[in-house]
Image (cartoon, rainbow, N blue to C red; front, top):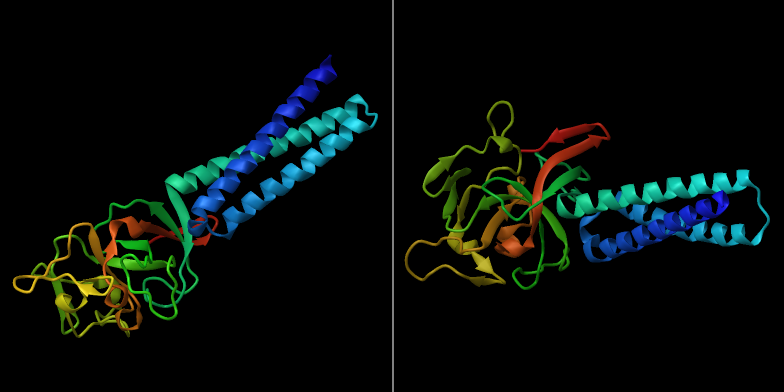
Length: 269
């Protein structure tokens, strides 16, 4: 009787493991473009574990066994099912709250470096100067050589709906207010190389899929639901100057931390 109860418990844990692996796989398929290798490893491990455990279970039923062997197998299944639940919980958390991303290239220097690992909070509510993750979409953007439709980019929000701005002599004027972009300057108050932008007029770059959306007369402002983003390495960045405006549906989240190590997370501003 006791062994039968253990066998039923083992069966339940195998069902949990299989179900968790299936759900994790679904998340990987539909949200795969926002997850890093660590999460893919979790999914792969869960699927592989399911196959191995199920195979061992079938073999286990076909051979004579004692109580000690049954108990060991029970402990293994118990651990694996718990691990699968932890992986699933982590995946759900990553899907709806945070996910990891990696910087590719030098367009965000000096704030972020190539191959920096980031923790991103999933949200579409962004504000001026937030560093965000956006996705290229040929419905809204011009796709140029070197990038592909669907690529993820890490950029800083400069303009939000209703904004008008321009640069003059490296200074940003946002809605007629002079902005001190301290994140682009060194300890002596000088712009890092590539950080300044001598002269820039929104009217030239306020585009959706290559078409200028500024009125023929009157002030040019960013349309509702659209955002203008730039890399901090202004003169060496493909951003809204190249691709045009980004729709709010293209925003994946706000960069909150740079991951230096497991227990070393640095706040990004």
